[in-house]
Each structure stands twice: as C-alpha cells, then as structure tokens.
Amino acid sequence: MTCSDFLKELTDYLDGAMDAQTRAELEDHLQWCHNCYVVCNTTKMTIEIYRDSRLYELPEDLRERLRTAILSKCHGHENGSVPAPVRRRSSRSSRSK
Image (cartoon, rainbow, N blue to C red; front, top):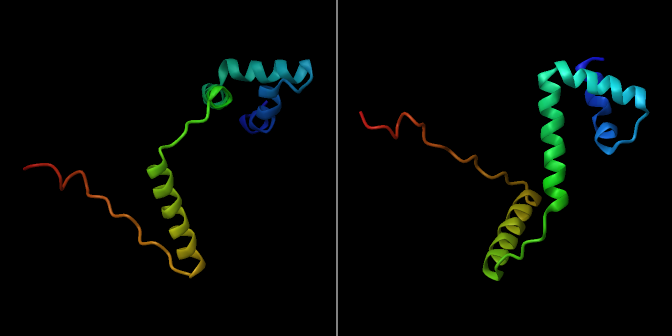
C-alpha cells in the first residue's frame, strides 16, 4: 500500500466503512509510515473535536461587527474591487540593534 492509496481510503477507514482485509492493510501501513500516521491521527482528532463541540453564542455587538465586515467584503468583491494585501512587518525590523 502506498501513501496515496492510504489517503484515498482514509475517510472510509475513519468511518469504519471497509472490509477487514483493506482495514488490516491500512493499519499495517500506519505501523511504518509516520506521515500517514500523523495525517490519520490529526484528522481523527479534528473530527472528534468538531463532533463534541457546542455552539457558542457571540455577544450581539461582536455578531453585528462580523456581519458588517462580511457584507462589506462581499459587496467589495461584487463591485470588482479586491482588498489590498495586509503587509506584515518583518521580524528583523522590530528587533533593536
């Protein structure tokens, strides 16, 4: 089994929707392939976090500011304007010499 083969089967593996032989091949691959192990484990943990998450009620003022910002961006794209990229200061320029 290759890493590419593993990634194609990852969803079914995590869902438990595959035959025993394919599952055994994937688990064998995970035993020696660190990269696929990390991808599988991270994906599994992400799914668990989202599955257990609860809705968080935003304060009204924050909700309104987010709504306004999103609508502003959407209207800007409709008019053909593209927002200017955000420039970040170089970490070198912020160091004292």
